[in-house]
Amino acid sequence: MSCILITGGFGYIGSHTATILSENNKKFVIVDNFSNCKREIVDRLKMCTNDNVAHYECDIRDTKSLVKIIKENKVTSVIHFAALKSVADSIINPLEYYEVNVNGTISLLKAMKTTGVKKFLFSSTAAVYGEPDFCPIDENHKLKPLNPYAQTKIIIENILKDIVKSEINWSIVCLRYFNPIGSHKSGLIGDDPLMAKNSNLMPEIIKVVRGYKNHLDVFGDDYGTPDGTGIRDYIHIMDLSEAHVKALDFIDKNNGINFFNIGTGKGVSVLQLKTAFEKVSGFNLPIKISKRREGDCAICYANPKKANEILKWNSKYDLSQMCQSAWIFVEKNSK
Ligand SMILES: NC(=O)c1ccc[n+]([C@@H]2O[C@H](COP(=O)([O-])OP(=O)(O)OC[C@H]3O[C@@H](n4cnc5c(N)ncnc54)[C@H](O)[C@@H]3O)[C@@H](O)[C@H]2O)c1
Image 1: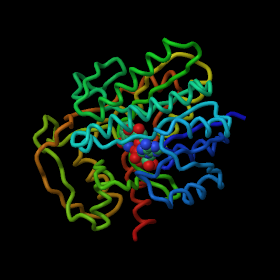
Image 2 (image 1 turned 90 degrees about the horizontal axis):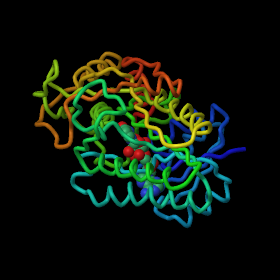
Image 3 (image 1 turned 135 degrees about the vertical axis):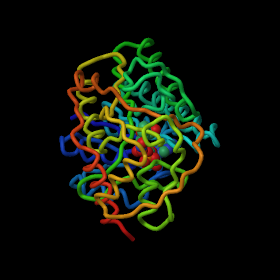
Image 4 (image 1 turned 180 degrees about the vertical axis):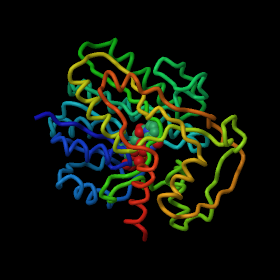
């Protein structure tokens, strides 16, 4: 039976993807260094996957250990989530981002080369498009990184392009995610980062709901958008996770490298998301308008047609369902 190595599998997207892989009877092994997840995620994920959670505490920069894990588990493909992901933090600490994201990926690819594993699914990001020239953004849009985080993802995409040219039989897919929100239906796992420096919108909303903050910071209300706040393509985490199962099927059947946008194709502003969340939760979210954040663009939403047609993947959940599922996670974990 084939076995999938999931790096960063205890993080937000990795853990939700693991539940879907488990539902699809896929065997996997997780590698994570616990730098951005709570230890309790291990037991919680076990509850969502019938105890199906083989794992190692390991840093992806430790090539030797990765080789050992790949051999021990007869790994046949890799989903690579492990990375640092805060745009704001990457501007302050660029070296850390190049070190973990770029060097970490090189270490993983070296371990794959040593062991002859050539199937690779990479977590890229819509941030590679920067301030878009047009929306919805398709995969041929120019890459214009606005921050070191996005730079690291482009560097990795370029490394992957060179790898498929250098050796036959590599099969690589880069999924460029838009903005995942929400949680697993059990409410056991959700977007629950360890690092205070992560500042995605939904975790920030949840901090206000839990009383860790007394208002939601809205960075900029003077963008050229209908309500002046930034527009993003929010996608339910389970829809995003499902795309990985489809991408793995594609990888099994196709060599070379392919890029896919994973979003809904719908733009939603910060204030629209806030209102949708208030509606499902009944919670009032006070806001504070601050100046724009460096590294943020005004409008960014996907053209997901390529993934719809080639991967046979479609998003199913609407904004209200996304907020509902984020709210379930808050309600079940209000300590
Ligand atoms: N969440 C988003 O909005 C978003 C959007 C676009 C792309 N992405 C990308 O998707 C991937 C997963 O994102 P996420 O939201 O699940 O992030 P996350 O921080 O929740 O998960 C990443 C996991 O990787 C682990 N990790 C970090 N560095 C590691 C290392 N050196 N060795 C081993 N494990 C390490 C962390 O402990 C964590 O469990 C990342 O590559 C991220 O850049 C995320």
